[in-house]
Image (cartoon, rainbow, N blue to C red):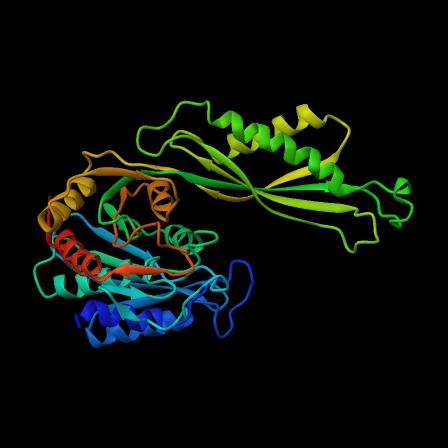
Length: 378
């Protein structure tokens, strides 16, 4: 079995479920175990690294290999995964079958991470075009926290390649996620006398109806040529204390996907106005921005795009420039002034699924692509 697949299997066997919803690290949640695995790898390959705290018990690990006078490069992939509760296979048992590796994170995002580490370690034995930094970051799945911490520390590079499942196609554009929490308020009463209270869930039902109409109207807007149009989805709702109490509070969480050219502040204002016009003073409510993950749109003629496209073409023959519906850490780097692209093994169709897997052939090709990016001046 190849070195990159052995490394990927070790990663899948290392639990690193994001703490985004549970709030703290435990035997399953948190990235520290992955940081230890990655540190051991860099130690064995005599590559310098540092560990950067992001949140309690959650860290980035950042390796650096000095190169020539060419442009500096950032390779980045995240160490956290989504939850395991919906899985139909053992999440941390990296089964190899039918040319695939199975398990949580096998596709998103440990395949990219393993391939980048092998690609860089192989490139380090050759002549690097310029200095290469490899960041394995925490907290991507629920907040892009690791990437944001890295750029907040002042890190800069001439270009970045972010690993995510793109079927090895070069992604130069993706949507962003504006997440909003909307709360409605009422007054509690005994459910046998509901007229003596104000039902916050009924109030929220009016807001949900407004958002349903708003989401339908988005389909009429012009689409971006690579990522399509904006969307809106109410993804979570919670409210009430018990069946026999008129609820005095209800919350929904809204996921509004932004296309290049949109920003979170404008989207929040747009949603706020849609609700305000429809419910007027009939509902007591408020809205908060809980996440702003911005869209990505990178010039296809910029140096890092050309460099990555050349490396992909050399390995797979594919020169496609693609866009995707999901968001990535690349937007954080792009906002900080680092031109960024996204490429990695696996398909988003397998990410986050009950039977997550990645094709071995793509992982091995990804390692070659990343190695070529590191050694190319393009």
